[in-house]
Length: 493
Image (cartoon, rainbow, N blue to C red; front, side):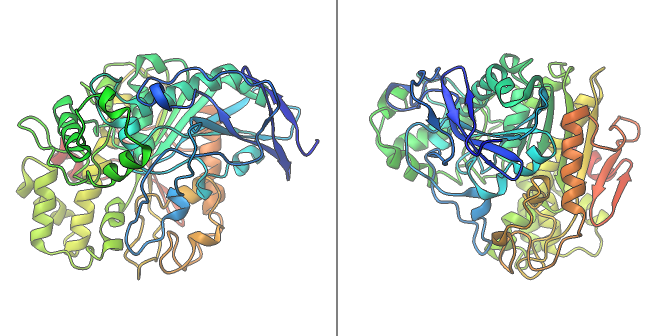
């Protein structure tokens, strides 16, 4: 295999870089640069290029503010803003093999709808390629550019970008040895919520065949009324009319600076709570929640793997010093944001965790409000259909970072899925994986389960049904659990 092989895509030739049995092709446009009149438009086709395109170097990323989570170093997760207009791009890793029609996995990064990129160091796709999977990562528009509900512009532009990326995969992935009829769309956090949005979007039907929702919120979409409050606040801050035409003349820097200041808007309405608990001012804007659309049967022909981590909420408390400092009043306040009957909610969680600290209770309620409840609803909706397979997991391995307070928190499963747990930046007292050595086979087993699901629709354990609700608990040992968190499910119902 030559060191710099060339692939011919529908728009032109791209030169990649081969190393250690895999080849990666970086910074391939799947849509036109979203600048000028296209900044708030639906994604448009990219113009062809005549000369061979260099796919050996990373490209620009979506405009975004710096993301800081206090004492925890999350730079391998978020990355940074690398300026440049032509950022609606895909990266592809493929094995150096003569085999064709390999399974394809397309990853959508997280970052609260305002940050993140496909070039963050966590998302190296070489391990997938070594296991005969063609791995694709996508950039998409973020913040005001991608998710502000602007009159005069299509809604959910970031989701439309991902769907455009899937169309590019459909057209081009065979040139990279991938099978366009075996595509798994997977994402984490905001990326997982976008995956659930794609499950609920008719225009995405047939573009992917399996889906993995890692710690997303399939009940996390904003209503039009909620989104309008964010738009009004952004327009007021920028001194511009709340319309795409008025925003068109503003710089990316102005939009990014405004994005960073929009958190904390009161989105509670007479009919709807803030499904993201004030942690971000951006989400999908939909008339129906993705889990409800799935329940109506739109994703009946898609295999689904859905799961969460055991202590999701720790990420939003421990790095800011709020975990150990939590009080009973903080627990009650979190419950009041999360549930119409907060007293009943707190009682149920205390009954299940009689020895828990206030920080543990607050984190458990926050984690279920943000991710657990919606993920369970998606699994239930899919399993109730005469659908293809439904599988569920709970990731429970605990990081000892931040003096042991980080635990099995949001995002801690990602290095094991991508088999990048050896990255030095992930290790240390203030790094995602802490100072302890993870179980030797954890990354190998978890990565293998995702690869198996991409190949066959089966990650290696029993299906989730409405009788047993089999959920694989992933820790130093793996054990299937039946009907987990029954009391929590009942109080959220």
